[in-house]
Every structure is written in C-alpha cells, then in structure tokens.
Image 1 (cartoon, rainbow, N blue to C red):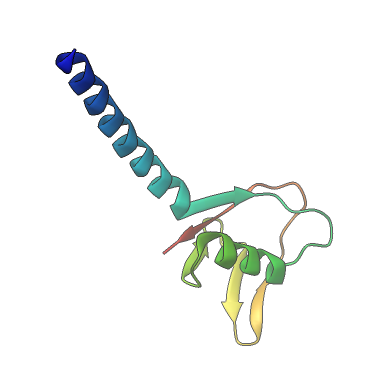
Image 2 (cartoon, helix red, strand yellow):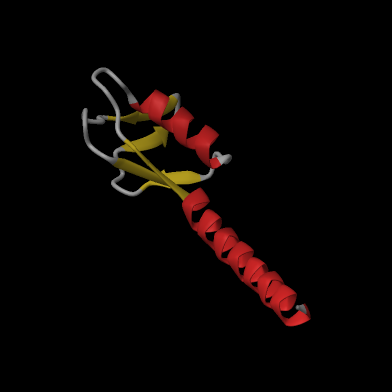
Amino acid sequence: MKILASLIAAFALFSNSSLADNSTVSATCTNFTVGPGTGCAWMCNYCANTLGTSNYYFTTGVCTYETGGCVGNPQEGVVYTCCAA
C-alpha cells in the first residue's frame, strides 16, 4: 500500500511540473484576431494586459510603439501574436 501511495505522489509531482512548464510557455505569448476597425492602440493595450508587462513585441511587427502611442495597420481576421520580451 505504501508503494502505491508513493507512486501516486510521484505522479502528482511529475504532473504539476509539466503543467508549470506549459503555463510558462503559454504565458510568454498570446494569439488573437481582431475585428473590423480595431487599431493598434487596442492591440497594444490587450497585449500589455494579457501578458502582464509593457515589455512585449508582435511577432509580425504589425504594431510598433512610437512617440504618442502604438501605431500600425492590423487586418481583420489575421491571427496576431505578441510575446513578452
């Protein structure tokens, strides 16, 4: 019985480690699409809030930060990805 309990405990520890590794990867980037009329200001705000940092980038370079705000030309229906830097 002790062996079974040890195996269950070891499996639970392994499972938690795997989940922690996966959540780190998924927390680093986020994918999303935008609808008509959505601009880079919304996209930049979304990425900052979702990733929990203002230090991020778009993998396609669709939006960039310039003096005065986030600018670019996002297209409806395209999957965009932003990642924490």
